[in-house]
Image 1 (tube, helix red, strand yellow):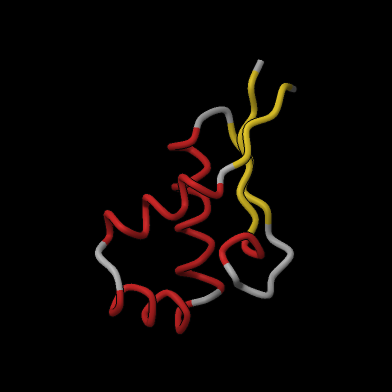
Image 2 (tube, rainbow, N blue to C red; image 1 turned 135 degrees about the vertical axis):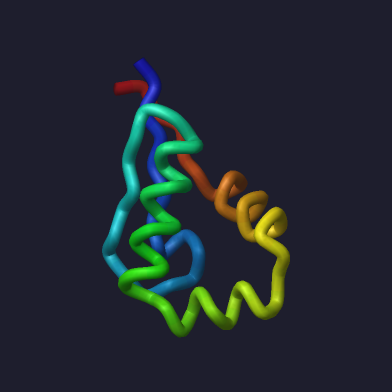
Amino acid sequence: MKMYSLKCMDLGIDCQYVAEGKSEEEVMEMAKEHAMRAHPEEMKEKMDQYTEEELDDTMKEKIKEEEA
């Protein structure tokens, strides 16, 4: 079974959080919720610079796929 993960550090944020899930979509949703709660200033800055689609594409590129 495949598992997916995304670290805040992979996105350039100094944080130890890791979103893990069974699909890329699940991981992205968890990462977005965490970022909005824990890093609101960084998220506002990124949302001012990039479209939501561009942010999603960046996140997808950073997601790691592993066998569980």
